Length: 184
Length: 279
Image 1 (spheres, one colour):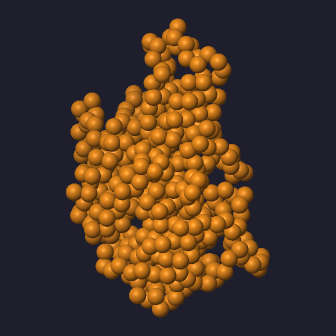
Image 2 (cartoon, rainbow over the protein chains, first blue to last red; image 1 turned 90 degrees about the vertical axis):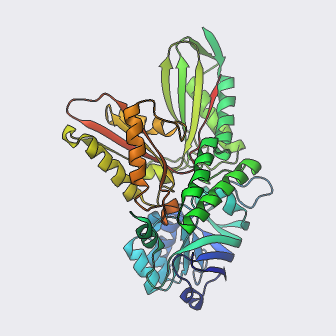
């Protein structure tokens, strides 16, 4: 871990310039959850030139489908899902202003290139730590596609949400670098 | 004939579904604690500590360990001298899953394979029956997350590939899976039988207690050798680099046809959840 940063959303390009793969970041503010089915719909809306359910500019999408909240909870367990399934959609969303993605697992070369081109960032959250990160989500509200259940788009407010910078605007890739450093 | 009422089966399955999803087994926790000590990567160490913390929160507050509360796999070991009364055994199991996933606030992740329409109650469960002698009745429920399942594969090798070919396939699979199945993983390997038998053996092997020694000494040797090799890949916790790529390799075998080596690799994430009950 090279540095620890606290960032507020939406993210600015100036802030993204300070981030390097391997940094520990704590996110604060609003992020949006969307996974397979929601991405399919977002990209379809873009293709049809229709407005999206939320403004993408500077925003962060979290690849996550929560378990239901118990009474008194904002959300149940809420860890990341595997990101490669969103690779087909991510460059298009970055072209339209998306600045951050949170998920788990390595991205395709096309996504890594788009992160550099559009100056965005991919954060890795800890897969399978769903109970832990749930504590850092203070509110959750479905803003689109309630019929998708766990896959609906949610507006989440997060407080010190823990992630690592996996891919930065300089082409840094923690998945490649980390494994290389420990291969024997 | 010993009689068991379906009501008791439903109740037991319901309770297993909730407990399996919120209470990580001692064997997995012990393995994670050991891994924290061994891990060289600072990020890896931090991740492992977070996973232990996560398990503590989940148990204390009865929150699922992971939001992917899985597809419910149920292994039933039923004595041939047991008689089920009061209704259908299968339906009793599905009903237990239905109630457990509703009452336990667990995610419903099961959908139609083509229309993708969610069944809404996490049924059907995958049920494997094993009929044994005597009158015992045991059920294991394992919620299987699909990060690991998506990275699992089966293949048919030629006999000429030998055990070296089997090993290469297993290690290559773990390497290709990389960060996706949420390492540190448990690697289940089924060798022999038919296509579906190999896959079944690989799955069942996952639920042997972590850290237990394979009773077959030859397989025990392979397990420790392959684990060492896997942990030299550098993938590490969450695939962000480190020593702890897997916590264990579990192998099971069955006799196979002279023309083939059936082989399956089933990968289990670190949230290796399973609980059992005997009625």
